[in-house]
View 1 (cartoon, rainbow, N blue to C red):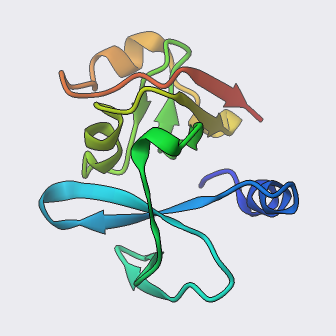
View 2 (view 1 turned 30 degrees about the vertical axis):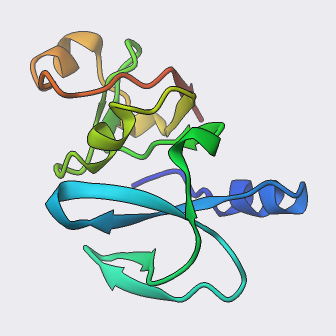
Length: 128
């Protein structure tokens, strides 16, 4: 269960902001593609991701909403097990936020036992 980001995406587009959609690459890498009306999608890992489109430079992304399964107050999150976001975030310097439902909240102690050395903290966990 995750927070539905469709309303956020709609509002950002209404305000003229560029919205990036993640696309996985070989060797557990990822990139973001500009969301446009004509963007085509395929289903990978039970998630729709863009087939084509304009790749957005990492340095031009101001804010990234990072998904996850569980979140702690200390900024750590449990992802979906592939490490795609952690690899991307290792060299990402701008703002990050995760949207957390109450059922996704875990304690700092619980997450401490589950994090790896390569896990990247999120700058802000927003609880809904």
